[in-house]
Image (cartoon, rainbow, N blue to C red; front, side, top):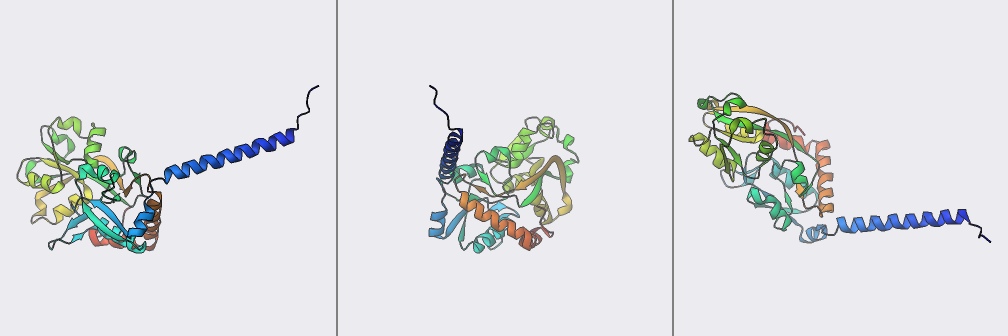
Length: 277
């Protein structure tokens, strides 16, 4: 004789099992994603360490007295002041930035850090807070007015920069015209020095840096800034993927700064215009 199946009881039972499984999956995900969250340590120390290239004007650089200033520096200081934390800035080798973050020598990368798919595999980005683009800086005496005129010329780039990444990822924009005449530098200021003495023909660099550099040269009219067609870049703060709480806290502050005008004030201080995020 077949047993009579209580379908209602079975449906309820299955539903309970599914709910329990969902809760377990959610718990495992939460524990995994927060396993390396350093927020408790950060709040105990009351200090965070920001990694940056301290020659990257106008985002983070030193004035004539040696004081560290810049758009990102001021923004980071304002952010952590609101969070009740002290911020320590650590100058790093830009080509090793993700390694410095992963090994715990710094807590974040905050220095005109372009958000790219390749970098997103290594770090967790904040919300974007500023836009920029890649341009060429050259001297008018080099007689370069377009990308195609870079044929047979020598290009300078910063090792580990977003410019170098997009140069390789989108060869039809510039790389195919250039050939193999590429020189890498650890900082942009060294590349620009070599531009001035004729060792390279142009520097692939962020527009913000290019404008600031040219404007502060004794003879700005000697320079040419050429658009490349790579498109706009978005800047973000880079965190370890496990630092969920720290990233969320910074996101909340950056979002509030967009609304209350703080971002615009810092932008006007360094760019002379409101922020273009």
